[in-house]
Image: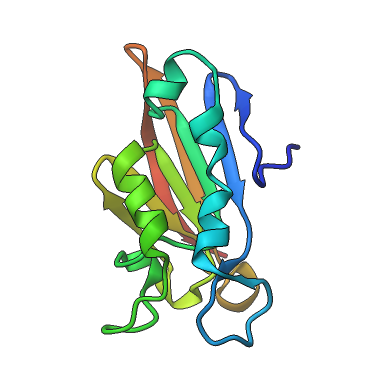
Length: 152
């Protein structure tokens, strides 16, 4: 058990960082935050002094309630995407191993941004869906072994 929010944690060679809340959209959803405020949750990556991880975040898993923009994971419907553009730009820049997200229940899916696997489990309570993400280390580098959406 770890608290991942705004904290960089290491376990078995994997770095884990989290961010709560979601970008302002309807202004009536709990925990809406300005996009600039949410992206500050990731500032710790700029100040981390952990050797190789500072230059490459290929072992990083981000857990973010707010999804990145313009993926299957932030699609409210065929034409409306409600994710964060700045979060997407961060992912494009650092290319973490995986992003585990939620918030947009309609966006239950798995997608990619470059090499990064993005997975939105949807809502266990409303939809009965959950996600499995398994990573493994091969040849000195972590890869996503399994990324699946399951239904109970």
